[in-house]
Every structure is written in C-alpha cells, then in structure tokens.
Amino acid sequence: MSTFGPLPPLTRLYRACEPNDPISPDDERYVNCDDVRGTNLPRAFERSLRRVDPGRWEVKVFAGHRGVGKTSELYRLRSMLEKPEVPGDRPFHVIFADVGKSLDLNDLAFPDLLVFTAAEALRQLREAKVPGFMATSEAIRNAWEGLRDLIGSKVTLSGVDLETPFASLALEIRNRPTARGALRAAIEQQSTNLLAAVNDLLELANVRLRESGKEGLVLIIDGLDKLVLRKLEGGGTTHDRLFIHRSEQLASLKTHVIYTVPISLIYSPQFTQLEQTFGEHNVPVPMIRLRGENRSAPTPRTAGMRKMREILEKRCAFAGVALDEVFDDPKTCAHLCEMSGGHPRHLMMFVHAAIDQVDQLPITRKAADQAVRNYANSLLREIPDRFWPELRRFDEPQESVEKDELHQQMLFLLHLFEYMNGEPWYEVNPVLRTTSRFRK
Image (spheres, rainbow, N blue to C red):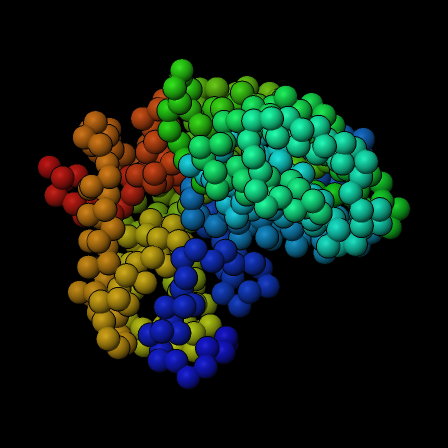
C-alpha cells in the first residue's frame, strides 16, 4: 500500500486514481489486461526486435485510443527489453522520450521532432554514461553551428544553453509560435546534415552498447498519439504532414525506433503508404472488451467486467481502502465500469468526478450518475450535428469503419471505440447511449 500520510480516505483514493498517470509494470496499481484485450503487443514487439538481423533497424508504430494504456504498455515493453526473461538474451538500452514535455501537440511538424530527437538522444546517453557520450560529437557540433548561423539571420534566440542547444531549440519552437515558421524553415535547410549527425550519434551508441555487452539501442518516441488532428491550409491534416509526408525521414533513423501514432491515422486512406515504408501490419492497442466472446451479447459479460473491477481493486488497495467500502452498492461500481466501455482512463475520470460529488465514502449511485452525466454533456457540446446519424449506426457492433475524415475524427475524439476478439469491431462510446439525442 502507498503511504499518503494522514489523509482522509477520499483524498487517498482520488490521488490513487489519477487518470493521467501512466502505470509501469512494477507499480502496485498495474493490471495486465492481455487476456481481455485479445493481444500482447509488447511481447510481439520484443520478439521482433530481438529476432531481426543485426544489420537492420526495425521502425514500428504503436497505436490505440488515447488513454487506453499505450504508455503503460510501452513501459512494459521497455522492461522486457532491458530485463530479458529468456536466458541468453542480452538487454537493450532504451531511450524513452515523451514529446508532450517539450513540443506543442497542437502544431507539431517533422523539424520539431528531429530537433527533439537529437536533444533526447544526447541527454539520455550522457546521463546513462554510455562510453563516448560525455562530450558532444563533432558531427552534432557542426550541425548545430550551421543551424545556429541560419537561425541567427531570421530569429533572435533567447536563452539557448550551449551545453544542450537542441533541447533549448525545442523549447524555443514550443514557446514562440510566432517564430515557429522561421525556425522550422532554418531547420529544414539543415535537416539533411542534422539527420546525418543524429544517425552518426545513434550508430556510435549501438557500437558502444554492444561492446559493453548489450544488444543495442531502442528509441521509443511517446506522445505523438496526442497530436491534434486538424486540417491545414492547402490540404491535408497535421497527421498527414508528420506521419505520411515525412514517413521516409521517420524511417531513416539508424536504430530501432517505435513511434506512438493516433488511432485515427490507422484509418487514413494514406496509411498504406506508411506501412509500405515501415514494413509492418499494425494492430492497435484495443479497449478492454466487456461483451465476452459473443460480440452480439446484449449486456456486458464477465471477463472484461472482472478486469475493470480488478483495476479498481488495485487502486483502492493502493489508497488503503476496500473496494466494498468505496461504493454504496456493487451495482454502482458495475455501472461506472460499463459506462467506461473498457477504457481505463475513463473509469478513473468517472471515479474522480464521482468523488467530487460526495463528502465521505461511499460513492453513491447518484454521484456516479452525475459523473457520467458531466461527461455526456461535454460530448453533447463537442459532437458536430453531422456526426449523429453515423454514430447511431454503431449502437450495435460493426465489423468495419470507413476510412474517411469523419470516422477518423470519431475514433480520435473517442466517440467510437475499437475492440479486438480475433478480428476488430467498433461500437459507440457507451456514454452516448445515455443521452436523449442519441436515443431519438
């Protein structure tokens, strides 16, 4: 049990159920959901990275609904790579970088990501004291000097740390939107040299790591799944601009790389181009299925609901309270699990919102209903009129979803959920079923 100090039970539970905290496998709150998701993607990725020819670099994309647990699964993959379970397998060194900490997800392009990758690779290799990385490489220094001269003729940089120039430049791009275009233009002019310098750095890291007894380097770029989907002037979307138009550059890093991508991208008509570049048939991280083996079952079945209850039990134990004491009735707990649709973050959000409705335990059905209603009302304000007729079609499970902008938006904004049971199927967010507009 976590130690929260002399805090009331509701406060301990509230903190234990923080929706935005990704959970690593060694966290007391972690729950393995492979059996109800129908897949073990981290294990499949680990096998692929270990089995590939040493002279080839695997580039993979990791997709799924926002909040479904992708970061937790990537933490699990990192653990598998760094601490192999099979005797004789050598550990990898993993660089794990979250773009959301340094870049603007409302407007992110390839030059921003290239600068961020250079900054994180340098920083983390230095911090890990990998031999040969205590000083900046000559190629990186030359790339920075050329870039600095170009930028200096267009934009006055403020506060650039010469020890970590690329990290400083990434922050400049995020914090100065009015200068963003000029900064990107300068980076684009030097992108070939900068990409070559980054690859020089990554190749050297792989050599040094293998000399020290490791398998090599894996770069995980997290947070790109949150890149906002919007149209751009001149056509295309922010997703196309980064993942489709720059797929060749994304695939050109000379080490194993895993990028998170928005689930809506999987349903882009142009996604085949990305698969041809990366050479991978991608399976998104699915929701926790609540219907059991029979997709057409009218009510939630046991396995998925048990898993959602287990998630809550772990959070309650972490907070030092019993699940049976948290809700006024087991049906209240089951209702929140059902309304989550098998989406772990939504379940935590509902618990947070319900706690805000009471002064002490237990959480009542009235409080749970208000939590769901709050989310339903936000969806009503958000969903465009043109979405409703199509959303109603997904009241019953559908085996496919169209590859167009409308359905990409529905998936990205969590109006539609994807599940897996041998084959994928799609249903409307269950909270929408509680609204009068959906029922009309």
